[in-house]
Image 1: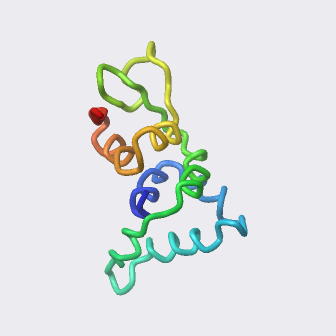
Image 2: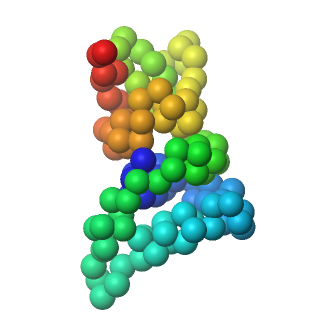
Length: 116
């Protein structure tokens, strides 16, 4: 998952970053995210924003994201769609489909499940 994708996934739960902010195991990755998401002279550093983060770091941060999702008729949708279908967490979606897919669901409200 890229820095900007994880930052976007945490937009509604900024407190998710607290799970790694004081953790010495993830300090370098946390500092990279903080640096990448700061504008310098009004510009983003695209290279830093596109840096791939370790999956374990992403999972730890995503456990703090309260968004819920549902699998329905070949799509993953935001949870509000159908309460009769089981919920998935952000970590579940990340583990099954990856960070880019999670970003697509968050931005569009749904994404078609890739076929093998």
